[in-house]
Each structure stands twice: as structure tokens, then as C-alpha cells.
Image 1: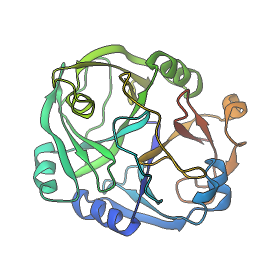
Image 2: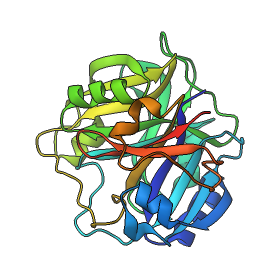
Image 3: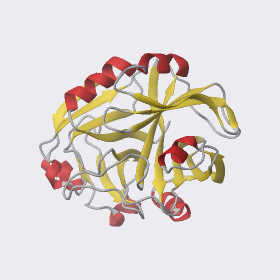
Image 4: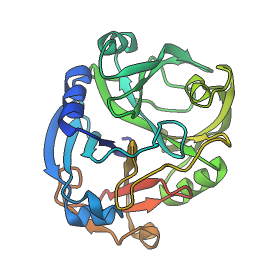
Length: 295
């Protein structure tokens, strides 16, 4: 089972974005709420208290969610060119069918379906969502050597990898191994990465360095080494970071990392938490990771 529990995206208009995900990728809303003061405090985002929020689930019923939080637009924020969460990756049955569905929609295809460099068993496309969030939709025909990847049981199924852009890949990788109960799957792989090349005005065959992390044999995190031109993510004080704001991961226990959390572990009533303890950590670039205790 993947440790990924949710990806959190800040949106300007919750109803617009929620309906787009429901209509176009067939996710379904399973909870609507307002962010509580205690939860906003745990995120170090006190001004998020009272914000409208929706929790969406794939039609397969997989226990991995997309959380949309209404938040003011941040002037100067552009996806892909700042450190932080870069993309959410969904597994799909037929990536070409997803591309056909998303044509002429609020989702802009920025990388049409193609086989991945060095991973011919995966066919993926890249999309910019209604609020600029980057989504990968990946058709998995076979497992890469030594790894286990999910197969989609619905048109668009669960999130299975989150992608983070780092100013120092090695430092972020080491931090993740220490705090997230994971190990390196592929270390410092160089690959053609057209999406980042386009974002930074580089030739499309420019190679970038990435690493991937796993728990057991389940791949769940990709760390991209950002080029020198990348910038810190602009944000509003007291709010979540814009775009993809945070990832939520399950861990066996919070005790080992409690001293590193922004606020002490606490319990919350929302569906995602189900009364379990959670807490938020920030990596070397300040990127937010919400950890949810299994017990």
C-alpha cells in the first residue's frame, strides 16, 4: 500500500475546480468542510482557518485523496519554476483516452502522451490544472525492474507519486530518508525532462537529475534537482503555499519525528484523519509534508 494519503492543492474558486475534477477525471467529492483553527495552526497557516475545502476520491474507492482548499491567488506564482511540490501523478487505464477527454477543457495538456525516457512500460502526459497545478497522468503497462506500481481500476485512479522540486537533491533525499520511513529506489538518474526544459527555456532534450524514493517496493516520491534559475516559492504569510501546497503521507508512528514537527502531533476530526494523530514537517526548502499516523 502506498504511503500517499492525499495531495493538497490551493484553488481560487473551490466549486469551479471541484466540478472540473468531478466532470473530467471522474473523481467524486466525499467531504466538504471548512478548515478548523486547530488544523490551520498545525499547518503553520493560521489565516487558512475557515477556508472552504473539499476532499475528492477516485471512483475505484482507493484510500488516496485529492484535497482542494480555497485560497487567495498569490501574485508572481508560476508552476514548475520554484522549489516545492511540482506535480501530482495519477495512474490511469488509458492515457490517450484521458488526453481526448481533457482536450478543450480547463485542463491544458502541456506534454502529450509519450513513453518515458528509459521506462518504456510507462506512457505519461503532463497537464496544467484549473489553478496552474501540474498533474501527470500515467498508464502503467508493466513494473519497472525491482519496483511495484499500481494498475488503474478506474478511468483515473489514485495518486501514486508526488514530485518535489529541490534546490539540493541530495539534502532533500537524505532528509526524506531520515523523516519519512523510506529508502532510495533510483539515485541521481539523468533523463530528458521536456516539461522542466520548457519551464526554464532550455532545449527540449536537456537532461535533468532526479531521484525516487520508496517504502518497501512501492515507489511514492520523486525528487527533481531544480536548475540554478529556480526560485523560492512566493507565498502569502499565514497561508498555505500556492499551487500544490502539501502532501500527506502515512507513517507507522510520529514519535520518532515529533521534535521536528511544526506543531506537536494532534488529532483532527475530518475524514482524511479519522481521529488519528498527524503533524507537519518542512524539508530543507520549507516544503510541507503532513504525516498521518497509521495506529
